[in-house]
Amino acid sequence: MNIHLIILSLFVPILAFSQTTNPLKQELRVELEEFSENDDRMYNAGVGYTLMGRRFDDPFVNSRWGRSIIEANIGMKYEDWFKARLSAVQIFTSGAVGYQLGVTEAGATNGLFLDEASVSIMPNDWLEGSAGVLSISYNPIMSFFGGAAQTGGMISFDHKNDNGLKLSFDVSQTIPTSIAKGNIITDEGTNPLLTLATAYIDFKNEPTGSRARASVTHFEYTDLSTATASDSFRTGSTVAGGTNFQFVHEFRGKELALGFEQELGISHELKLKGSIINNERAPEELRDGEQVKLEFERKFNKWSLIPSVTRFRIEGDALPSSYSVSSYGYTNRDGYSVAMKAEVPKLNFNLFASYTNATAINKDGENLTVSQNSTYQADREIFTLGAEVTYDIF
Image 1 (cartoon, rainbow, N blue to C red):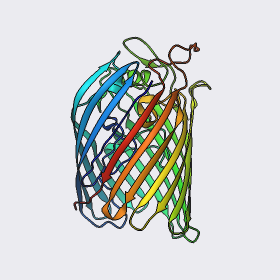
Image 2 (cartoon, one colour; image 1 turned 120 degrees about the vertical axis):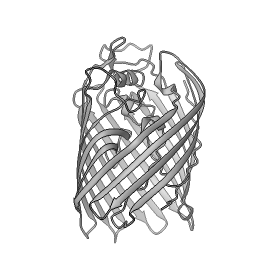
Image 3 (cartoon, rainbow, N blue to C red; image 1 turned 180 degrees about the vertical axis):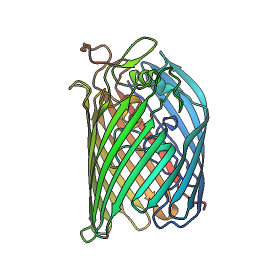
């Protein structure tokens, strides 16, 4: 069973590509550039435009639609102790969607959505507190989780020295939201929370051209909504219930990641990174995930070529599948992805393409234990093609 996914993306002022953040934007992220430590501008702003086409076919879905995404970002900074950011997204979708039992991977979304509305206080150069609707990320090196817009608060501690060493520790508590329900939780009696704590170390050795990184993230979900359970039931996690779905297992555990980069002369660079995840509340056969990515960069006079290959395995209850990186086909998947990217730094322009082959670990029609779930699970292939350009308005 194949999924053929072709994304053609055109980005204008202040755009950056990454894996999923706000689930409404699928595989694309549009984001205002972060303020750097030496950035003395009082205001920062940008707009973005994305075109995206998708074809999705398997035994449960027959979907073909086109999507336009328009995002506006405004940021401001006051001296060295206060900054704020606002980001809103307008999504237009048109096409045809046929599906069985509301499979959310085929969904077509229209509307205006808030992606971030936050304020940050920085009493000194090593402490920052943020609150509001935040663009939440998980492990900073490599994560199975896709980022998302979530209401809550965060405290960050950072330390840098002149020898290339950086240490940081972040803690946050937010309200995790559902793919199908946007940014609103509507379940009666539900008070969902996501608690995160991440420790990170980064060391650069300029003389040798090497860089080593390590990070560990503790995550804990509390009282997840039935809407999230319904989404995850269709994308890989173990869920029970008829009209009111509930997760069979809780989600609390750790995600550990390592990364290493080495310059090879002035025109080559090798990068290797990987991560593992463990949900301590799930059975042994359903709780783990691992991924590793090898990337090589060849720098030419005015542009660079970057091929990469990623190997991954994500068991069904390593994390709630509605929060996982959708480019891997969600959870309960074993497979690989190969990609190619061309960068033109002076023009702030990139082209990228990738192919992902994901095999369902537990499939429909197989004899499974009671603790396993394979509803709507099928093998799939994903093709991605796109382009991006970045530009700073002011």
